[in-house]
Length: 141
Image (tube, rainbow, N blue to C red):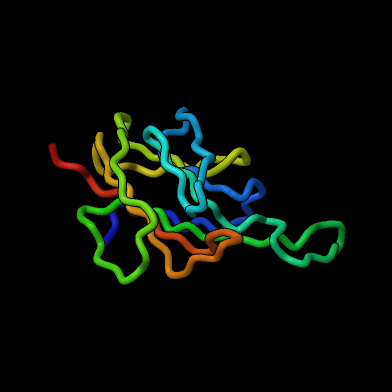
């Protein structure tokens, strides 16, 4: 399926979380043993923490662990064998969705003013997700 928009973001997550949704919303942090915390128009992912490796200093810098998030705006739901971690509807009145953390945010077009956010993964690691797909699908009224 050809996405309307797609961002693949691989980077260190120094806070151990990635936030998807309304950047002005209160960020949910109560995971209750799950990998995703849901809030009002926003979800928080428990991703692999940047310091989750046995790093050695190299030329004054750290070798950071990374996590990858595939954020896609789609015409319809993608059929996948990946495990569904979250399937919720968020309000996107500006028809945009943000992805990031306290270190920075990216903005991607949302397909509608109400958007289904479906979060999936290949593998769950209790220390944090290493690879995640977050699909945005228009909700028809």
